[in-house]
Image (cartoon, rainbow, N blue to C red; front, top):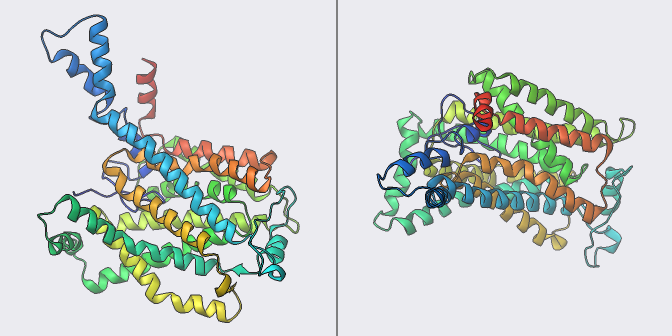
Length: 429
């Protein structure tokens, strides 16, 4: 059950090793149904010529179609579509649950049932809304700390799955397998824990900026801005990991930056908190890219067990080391929440959905192409937009709509493989 490593997506801290690219989105395309050795097209030819008495005419076409629909690559595509749907649903659900935490009832109505405050986002001052309605819960760092703690479940879930699939293996063998890879790379216990602490800070910092930006912007705006992390990953990979220069990806980076600029100034700059929210969400995207590239640079290739152990250690370090900071922010009044009225349903739902998204991103690549996992990051934007329209009466027009479209275009251009003109030629032929 060994996997090679590559640059992760937001959900995937490592993936399969493919040459020469280390960008997951790019590698997903390069390893997709048009390029992979077990692709639909590559399986059809031997299937038709393997038998000297193969049927001809309509019967041959039906047989070829049946083989294609049941091939290994076809099954990967079917499963990949399902993974994209699940990743989209979990990512949208987690983000909207966190957004809901900021839209609680006024303090004067603290004993009443919680209600979601609807609003028209055109010309809306989100800061004023938070001050008026969300005074009962203003704890972005506590939310980040609580959600990150759930990553401790990675290795226990992986451990239970290995025991259920390979009953002959004892518990010590599974644990030893997860550690052996790090030991072979020369990591001592102190050095490994130091690296884990560094990634824990990066993880928490990135998620904190993401969650904090939800105080100012709608969930759709934040997710669209966060999708630009693929362009940051390519830039950092080009500089640090000596990724191959591809002109269309540089164009994609420029398009993504243009989309970010349009979102930053969609409400003007005078007295509007929008610019600060855009900066936070974009910084979260950049932090995610730094995390991914550093993981590839420092940790390198990793197996499922190694990544599960790595995630669990991040969760344990977060729970053990960062709780004093969360408590200090509460005691000093920087963050406010009422423990007796804590919105546990929304908080627990956000944490569980975030865990599901991370599990899908890290382990479903064994059964499908990385491309389908990465697509969940951009398909979440229109789904979230529909929810924002229904729940909050949001309007997506003008600079906001143009910015999101440009970010989506840049996202797909970054995913283009190095030899994309060859794919276009093959498709045309």
